[in-house]
Length: 432
Image (cartoon, helix red, strand yellow):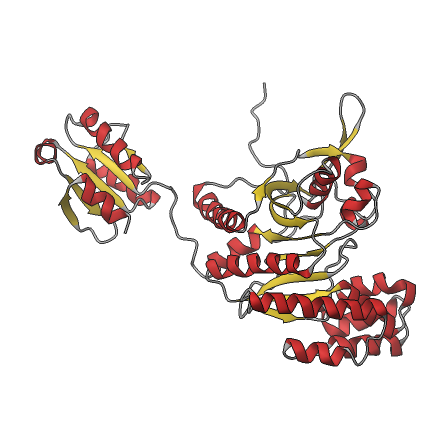
């Protein structure tokens, strides 16, 4: 049998401890905040029926091209999930008697068979939180409060850019884009990447008149404090849908003010390309950072669940956090740490003390402190090299002398300082 060439499939990765540990800390931070707001976890299959994944309006034509598709042995058409919104809508559709509001979070890998480039992979972790069953803007404000608390908790300098798809449609109506407004919105969604001139060129290439393009770009350039932006845009937008979008933004900002969410900035050019958004949309960006991509994004999608239920509107709003860009941003700011292990202490038995050391290790673990003991019978020098290579911050030396004194010798691996302490004092020190 030929030797197997060990390598990953294109577009997927292994995460060794030094990468997985900081990523897991991000996930744990987010989970803690979600649950603080009363959101409960759900899990859905990685494999779904293809007709569910490809349902009308689900993710837009571009995403549907990226579904990993296959047939099972019964020749049923299946696919791997490409996001967590579609499975969540399916769950609500299959369980119409869920209590309202339904507050859910979900953290699972998803797959997209798209082109591979820097920062884009075929398998990645998705982290979503949603409120289902509430039409009021207070639900959207609570989602933004979660976002604000999460990024403040990670000590990041950020802004939440907010817009409203109804308002954006109103702006398209003012510009005269009519039934082709969705094509225009998808072009405008590229503003941050290709700039105003790039968007203008694309809109002209799509066949829009220069006057129409100039009209829309004039509005999209409106900047200032949130009340000023809304005051200015009211001079142009007159359609019922556009005015409803303005009203929703005013309500949303009002609720956010009461919730002490101070990081919101209205951005009239923010579109979020997916077709299923029906109201507020938002994205999170870092200020003064080399990371230009959004770290989280979401919005309101009142029609998507109704599609599965065979009804009209079914209110829902939520956000998806980008674990990868968050990790890259924290790494850039040197906030991820350098540990290659979760262990905080390595216990090194000296001489014939291994079995006597085991109860002591358990006492430390009972206090919630990750602790390991040398189980290979190595000498002190090799154990210290091992601790240094993994970034274990403390080492305990335990010999007959320490056992007689009912103490241990604790070494701080960073400073080299050593102390003779009781186990109780060791625990106290590490919990500080």
